[in-house]
Length: 243
Length: 325
Image 1: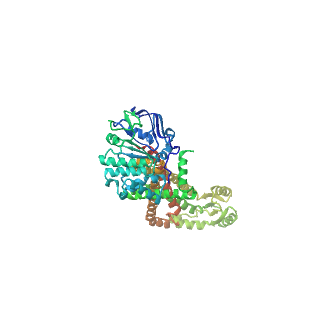
Image 2: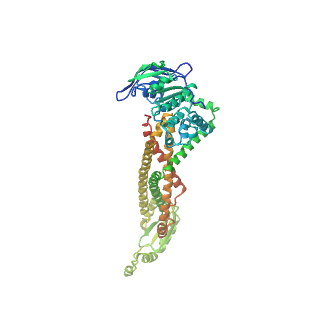
Image 3: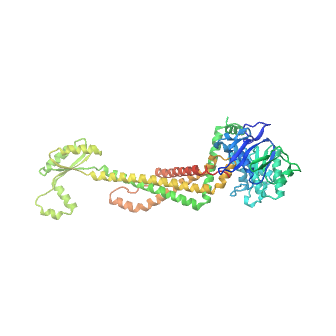
């Protein structure tokens, strides 16, 4: 079943994500993003960095349609998100794999059911469901823990369950918000290596992180946000001289 | 073409074409899964579930019991309705022979089913037997009672009986016409009043069921706040998130209905002894209604529908407020 693989109106060669003078102002008056413009091509892996409160999370939330832009246009897969109505949001979100710092797992059910949830929601069942869940768990190295409950796992393992859940539907886009925030450097590297692996098979990956050292080490394009403004675009590939 | 349809189309294509029967089967399977999962969730927290079910059971049992009793009371009255009698008190100077002749003549009327004459002597004897005034009657030199003709009208309808009474009053030998009907009309008036009361009570208790289930589901939604958030994050539709809560409501109502039937059964059994004693005293067939399948079925179905409605309202109000943060 490849229902979730691909945004409907996307064709190859164009930008998968395009921000056009996007601003986001919260009801309190706080402007989280102001006048952001950038493009991320299909199949690219990129980072968003900046201090906490710089707008990294808001940027990802706009792409996942957890928020809507106050001004400007967000296009994902050629689709203007402003035109995605409330009722269509769930169908849109199935194309986006979301990974959070706090994992957002359901602690009342085992690993298998956590990972299976997106497929169940998409209406898959039977042997195909089991096969795909186990394939996803295989990719994150947790094949043997499918019956375990999340609380019995380490933080790094829980994060990998979260990643398995994000990729099990084979979405064309992965968004990760501080996925290594709670992990030590070795585990962080492992997680990032996973993202690289998904990117190599064609998934577009956008990671928000303030782990500058790791990002520099990996050498992918980087966007820098500062107080809601984009001070460095995604075409910038960080080199050793970067601070 | 909207992308949603396209996605759906792709899914069908990917599964090897669109089969209506297969789609329907999958849809049914999904609902069956949700229904079973909801039942399992109820079973995993037996104490609070049983409390809710008991409250619904009592709220449904009360109006159902009253309804059964009122229906039986109306039925009980109908047993007497066939016995509508009209007593014709004749003038004192009409002889017993003349009374018998008149009775025969009346019996030939098409609107009179039967007519039989009670002579003055018979009347006196009967009065002595039943009234307890036998000694007082000894004092009297003459029989003070007139001859009586008791007739049964063919029709029980009030209009037909009234028409008959008017015509009978015009016959010169007849002094007074008395109908044994008025008390029956009063009885039915009371039954109707009680029926209306029971209907009002049923509506109120029905609303109570909606509120109780609505509140239970609201608490359920609150306690599963995180799960709902996660489901929304990974693309669950409102219908998908709503489904288990609606099935929970349905189960609460249906199980509450079954509890109500059990309560009714126990209650009727407890009342059976005294009621049949009373029925014997009144020469009636049976005072106590039985719990028939129709009533039991409508209590269970009614409970399920009301509780489903309650959960629908709760889900509609509270689910939309939960947005992933």
